[in-house]
Length: 156
View 1 (cartoon, rainbow, N blue to C red):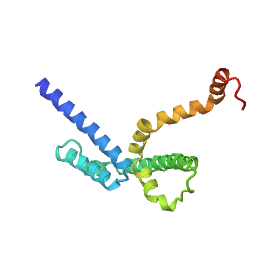
View 2: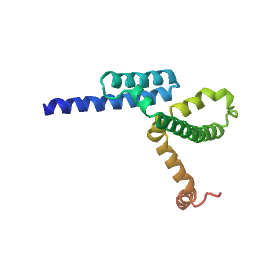
View 3: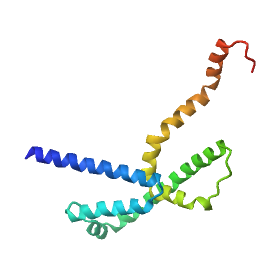
View 4: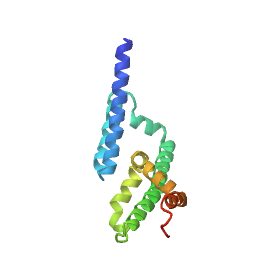
């Protein structure tokens, strides 16, 4: 009996991890429709298996639902400000044309709607590179001093 429960737990956690990875991929590929479908399927499966009845919970907790939805959207808007700043900085560093907000509505909408998955993608994809770049920029003079020590004839 215990082995069956452990196997069921491992399968459940494996499916949850696969679901989150799939949603990160949906966010990365600008596929909000697939992400919404994935969330609907998971909620439907939870309801079907009797784990969580979305409709009963919503009916019993309308105030909490409104608070959750507003908090989710607020966090998404804040995240979209951060992502837009990173995007524009990247475009400027590459000396590309100035990005226009209205031409990037879909991307910004994805950041707002799928922000938890965008955060995961950023943490596991860009954060480390951003930290390394920040360190190099902060210690630029140290790196230059080391270089100058080995190449003393170089004039700056």
